[in-house]
Amino acid sequence: NAGVMQNPRHLVRRRGQEARLRCSPMKGHSHVYWYRQLPEEGLKFMVYLQKENIIDESGMPKERFSAEFPKEGPSILRIQQVVRGDSAAYFCASSPEGQGGQPQHFGDGTRLSIL
Amino acid sequence: QKEVEQDPGPLSVPEGAIVSLNCTYSNSAFQYFMWYRQYSRKGPELLMYTYSSGNKEDGRFTAQVDKSSKYISLFIRDSQPSDSATYLCAMSGLNDYKLSFGAGTTVTVRA
Image (tube, rainbow over all chains, first blue to last red; front, top):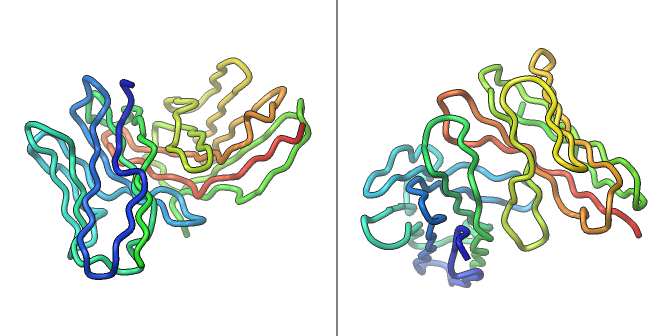
């Protein structure tokens, strides 16, 4: 499967725990984007990364959220000390280039539930 | 006002009907326009991708962009039950990489 791979597909955490979401981009893609989807709402941009660089994190909450895309391995979205409001579907997308208008291809998401 | 407004639906049509979906937007800098299809519990799948104004056809799907009215449309001809999904419009500016999405319209095609 050469598509965008996200894992886990479902993640359950208790309030105060940490959530780590992983994303492997499509083969040949070096640009990764994370979006969050709340019920009845469209996808909201969170962060854009290239290998070893965060390009734009303007959509990330200022606290508890961080993202990385190391030289080797998948991109990671980390949420520390999770709260009920973090429950959502988190989608990763990738593209071969980062300039405007590049079509982005999405994974099937991680559905995070906070108990 | 949201940057991208999408008819909320839901839409229910009989098999074979034409499905018409629309979005309006407020940011005149948007140049790239996309339609994604999202099945339940799956990720968005890119359906149509257009640049600036005009029409684009791909099989049973036609995308239209009217930048003067800040209005985009997606038409699905000869709709099938397999077209039942949520359809999301998305757009971005010339030098922008983040996509701005509509909230999505849920479509059901009845056999």
